[in-house]
Picture (cartoon, rainbow, N blue to C red):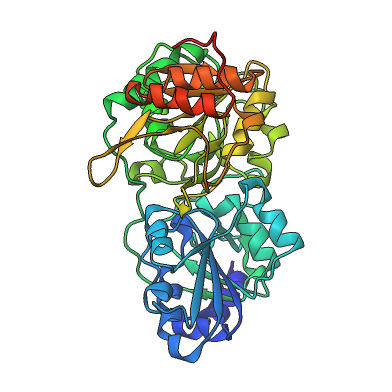
Length: 445
């Protein structure tokens, strides 16, 4: 330990000293979500007037990002996100963030084969006696990015959970260039809203199709999180976790005695995830917990990995579905909302699983800021980003019902989707389907 302690002291810098390595034109990586390097970002922002054209990548950052906020004209720092939180979406609306199209299982391979990283920065746990820092919730993508970086700067955050993993959950001090320390506030929380009656109805349509012993992927957002809470109150037993994101829904299932992971084919007895975002109680749960493991997302989200679990159940949100069965989960028109994430990964993997099912959920309608009602089932998309192609659409669920689009022709899809649309929009959707030649006279009205 004395050897590692000496090396630690030799590499220790203040945040301002550490960011002196950044040069104009560099590509910088801030990593993701709760591993965002707050102190280093603040120090980099203080160098604004010395730098130009510094490109920064991040993902699911809750903000504020000082290097972005200090440069509203983007003359010094250009921020890009792999997946947007509501904060990053607000940056997109202000022209201060650009989305990087991807699917999560490919992020690290993108770095390995195509991308430049001049400086990588992230928060990690304190070093252990063997000289290792744990990458915590950042394990899903971090090691592959750190390995590609010319310079690695670690920011120690004692509030991060130390997680076990299958591989790449730690980095040794010998692989690190600089270390910074400092005070940190509490870790960011994933916001949770009370479920709406529509969301409860959607959950109740899905619950009968989930068997005991199923392995669950619950996507980002209120609907999958709320469904986890409903599952915790159900009669189901021996559920498993294989997911890109571990949220409080899984903690609810664990506390209710429902999440045992005993019936999983892959890694039985262990809940598998690629990241952890939620409440303080959630962050306490995986800390040195051998019942949970965080793996790189190129493993967690690979369809062939997902499919190894029988009865794999994937549940994700979307923004809209068109009558052809195309799914948009990342934009409203051309306005960017979130990102592809791992939705397509899990839709594909669950469909490949023996007994697996992939559900795409949406309330049938929403009201805009003026109070006007809009349908989430559309005749066809016009500029919206397609997350799931129609060829990979399976179960679609609204509060009005659940339909399965597998093997259905275009007119059958139109009929099924209109049957679960908000009643106020069904007639106009039928008229649109007629114009699009995907409605036949024998269809139900």
